[in-house]
Image 1 (spheres, helix red, strand yellow):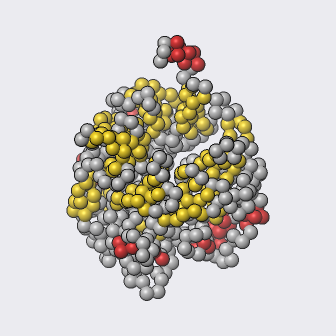
Image 2 (tube, one colour):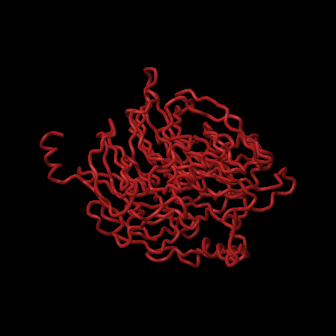
Length: 604
């Protein structure tokens, strides 16, 4: 719950800004004026946007309203009814703008996923792009009339990329809500599940490509659109490429949005849910090949960790499930989706060498098991009924203080922001549809049920793609699972989502894994060249920087790692050991100074 400034060469503490409960966990933004006299850290906390002076660690009170921009404002809905809009990912700074997505929730009547840009110096809203088009806007006819008033999601909660030379911003967008039942949003649903290119200065749409039509499987776009230059038919093309949850790589001309490899619209399984109209086809890239498995059979049940009885039950469950391959829609019968809701690729799982046309993807193979029901998941027990929760949530999410170390005055943070009644909590069920809406009579729900331990290894992989040719160069498992290794398995990959690939110009690929190790691979063939133990697992993206000719890599090592005798066994809740008692934090690596001197002497 703090922001901390450290000397990047020594790790020595410079300042601490405490009491930041609710701060976004996946990064902060940095901006400086041209003369470098004004330097700011920009971050999201408790559904607000705030800034801290990077030199002093004190809040910038001239930003917004006494240091606060309320992110609930300006979404076209009553701010008191919006439970969540803050994203854990920080957005992107371009010139004097901070460009942002949001997290909207995934229930019925979630908040809309507008894309917005704010002035870094003042906090003023500069532009808004409606990802759920309003009347008269492009894409409005891909939805039923008036759905912009109640449909939510279509948000960028993953990573945003900017081509600074062209002033173009690229957004991976998520699905519309509710994610698994779309009878109230019949149509292709632009701009859901798109790679969307906007003018970074104005928010004007330049082009889009939709990689899932009428999503029913939570196949959000989350991984960063990566910018690189490829050679096709003897011509160099500036491209943008994106890996998806469903295991595909889409590579497009970054200026026009034209596909560099043919993409086919292929028939996909039809939904049998009442009122649902699944889209009859979906896009399938013809190259490069998928990087994740896209079908699960009973023969692929995990031979490790599970007991014989558990293994038999899972084989029976997979054999009897609604299991018709990729894009099988959820049903009242148990349905298998692989990749599941977490991918495939997800946020923080891709990187490129922008000059040689190579894309690197860290992938996670875990299925989701869905079963539609009229009962909303997670119904509260009697002691935790909606009414007390409605009263408690506004206090939690509207009034969390940001004080200390020059923080925003608490009085100003609360002033005019507390709802007058119990309106801050929105359950999965959502509100009634607006009058006159041609809405379905029933709402259906499902749990996520992401089951990591069902499939055979490898559970996570690192894949290198040559996007000049549209081929896989190599693919290797990412890390190891100690439980499976103890039973004789090899090359398992970790059974937790991989994050954080870092590629160097010198031909190295670094990855900090959830198994508690950081590794360096040869970018040419995936050979492991070096590894080091971390005090905990890593679920973040490493940072690399240079000071006085010496390169450093800093890794966050704070995540749980699977341990022998602990964790998933095929039944009961998923869990993992937390390395209790061990040191956790940031770990920095660098070449020894002596080695650097030797390299300089040798002329390298």
